[in-house]
Image (cartoon, rainbow, N blue to C red; front, side, top):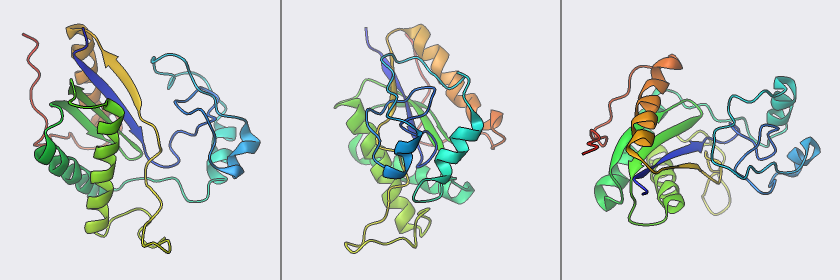
Amino acid sequence: MLLGFHIVCSAYGFWLPNDERGSGSDFVRSEALTKFGPANPVSHRRSVARKPCDPVIREMARAALKYEPVRFNDAQIQSIACGFECELRRFAAAQVFACAIMRDHFHLVCGRCRYDIRRFAGRLKGAATKQLIADGLHPFQHVVFSDDSRPSPWSVKPWVVYCDSVEDMLRDIPYVQRNPVKAGLRPQNWSFVMPYDPS
């Protein structure tokens, strides 16, 4: 029985659609990236992050991007969390049991959602982007299009892992909680995260 989801959303430039390890994308939007191969979609939901890859090719592909890959600083991480909190307080689409906002992606474990989980992830990214703009912290703050919009700081599709058992939830929640410290960030305790009760 579906109990929840582990969502991973990448910042722009973190995980490219044609990454040789695989990706959640089925096409390459950027013409500059096509020389590094077609999209490399995976047909399963297991993480491919630990698969070996050529770091030189990966950096060459990143260097071909139109904009610099996004790396959130501490103030931007706080702004993203504020955007999440506003979205979750207003719409309460799902209970959040773990959230780690990293320099170039975020992890979130939640319970069942009132609507499609990819739409939920999109709403979180949109709320975070809106807050970054309001705080003057958008990574592309000075890149303004004619319609007054900016390039998105996020990749298009989230990576979604379905948690079908209490064991899945109890595996993924601590994994997400440990992520910031493992990456050299401070522990994160967000007000919108609640304890998980498996009973």
